[in-house]
Image (cartoon, rainbow, N blue to C red; front, side):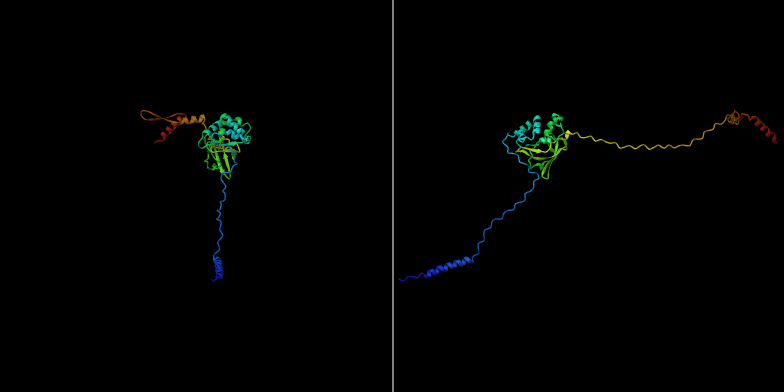
Length: 292
């Protein structure tokens, strides 16, 4: 039995290895894996309603809302809270929040510093009915979130009533702020005191005074100056010449020469009176002698 040489086997293995290396060199390189493109994020837009300071966390369980506790947390709304208590409005609002199922209330609360800007003794001059109307003027009968002020339709109705131009508000959201006007006071919303699903309490910079408290001033009508009457010009007439009354002698002479006709049954007889009778008779006789 002849012994087989291992050389052909080694050559076959070497040839196979070289062939595999050549094929690997000729194949295209595998491209590196690319990460998926990152989507571009849009630039944030500035909201119309400003982002107000967030209120502290509160209990939102039903029936737990108490306006007195909310306003008393910061110890900055003592005067406004006292007015709400003396007018009994706070009890009405708390009862409404307990039974409410949809909608809500919005309270615009002025701080104690805002009341100090009122004329001295102003609150003492108000009657009990006016104090109630003043507090009602700071409450909206609808829930308005901080992002919904630009959806309000002016004039905005309050709990004080719906007298046009008397107990209504003008609310304008513009330039990153919420402005409120009563016709007598202009102010802004400075922050959120409290907010849940049915109640929003905002801090305002001034006490909102309704125009109803300020009667309209009567316009003084100034009469136009009257012109002085034009001078009356009188036409001066020349004096009429005085009538000269004839003297008694001239009157007698005129009456002496007057011929007075006398009507008789047979004709007209002319009678002459006066001192000229004799000469007239003599003239007639003389004419009679001259006739042939």
